Image (cartoon, rainbow, N blue to C red; front, side, top):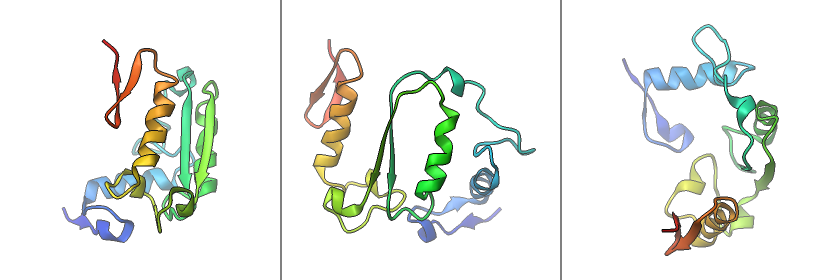
Length: 134
């Protein structure tokens, strides 16, 4: 029972069981793990598609070092790394969840859509979203 006050990390309140899972993952050297601390990534070695790995200078939850530590979990993936400051996107702050807020400039979303278009066969940009070509 209970809730984690999500305002502390810039999100909605979280059910206690979700907050406990996130805390367990954050304390584990395997990051995502089961209740006994065993890694939950049986297929990560199979990931061989491009990944645009983004992190943000003002993210208190996933600092640069923590994000970099996850890279070895995807040894076959072509990783494009971006560590951005709020000024890079023309905003005052991003934090952990800010990139996904409506207040993020359209240019940031257009950049992501363009990145996907370049990697997904048949995708095209349509009114601010990437869609599969017919």
